[in-house]
Length: 497
Image (tube, rainbow, N blue to C red; front, side, top):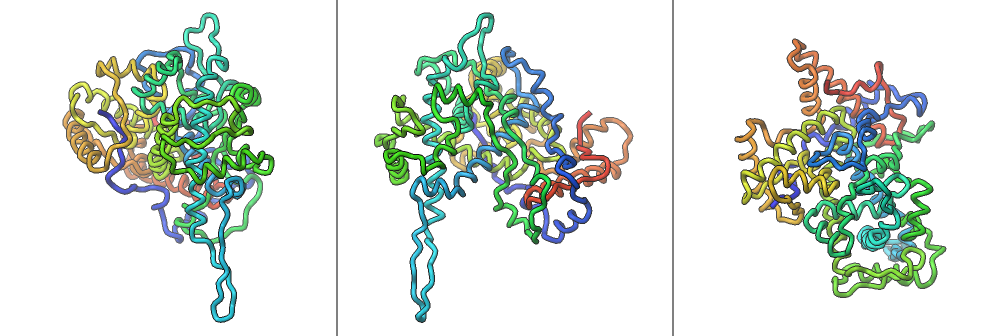
């Protein structure tokens, strides 16, 4: 059985381990800030996503593996959902009021002085907003699922209709669908059991998702007050790198067929809620730990239509679990921050090759628990988001569908990883678990780019170090909400030939 791997070792070279305060100051002195918003560097480069325009999503190529562009959008999507959206929900005062989550401060008297004692439970109670949001998203997913035949009707001459920019669902529905796709055997059964076997042909629409993800490089045309910030402080700052915006037509179609196009906005506008809705939202807070056999009422006029019916409450709970387990994987991707690495293209290209090799091991070792590294797992997840293509690849390479299990324990995973490492290195005579930090990946990409040319190693190392330093400076400026720095000659990404 296949599964997602939880790394047994700490992050090596992640953005929160880069530097001390003095090194941040050095990088700020080395690279001057852009004078205008338009002059700021674009990271990742638009060139990374060029292949999205070469893919005809209406044609399903048998056994195809994902390309670099699709994997890069996957990284964008994970950040947009599990970093930006989640943080937005957890820190929203409007949602606190909608769910009636308010601090219960108390007054205490010490030596005749009355002081206000903060509510020690408030932060913990705020965390319940995320699982409630996921529950509502899962319910909306089931509505969207049943409405799909109306949203993307069959067209003459088109064998398998696909989603487009004008039929894309909102980000909360995409979040649930994405997590469900990572369980291919269960997903195929769900397609059949709900009476929609044709949905198995749908591919996750990476190209259109990329279009809807608006990148925010920094604060345009204005400098916020500067302060001395440590890296530990930076890790706590909400980092709005992406926002997700449906097209007007997609929003209108979703509204007609399912409900409100923006779940967060609908929840946040609590002043417009009916008394019934406010009661239900507060009941969801109090019943957040309810068992699958005891579903709370989800009849919310402003958010879910009155005709809403669940397939099964247990199925909703299962979908919620799928999404919640993606939190850990998304955090690992955020820790390594490959999406803004100078070696992004090389990292993903090598990971695709390694994934293809990894998949061939299942045929030779059918009873072995094979555990992927994080870079291989990213490609694996991306491949599973095109379920029909993934099934065909598995049948071609292994003669069976390789399922994905993200709920196994750490000890089981660690033992499986150790055995996978032994098998992989014996078969392919290359390191299975290399360091994938920006510096090491930059050197690999640099060596790949020069090939057999007689290029001085010292010169190559200096170029890679300069590129990595610049990208670190850009990321630190972005996190501290300053104008992004520039350098002579532009971004100068480490690229493959």
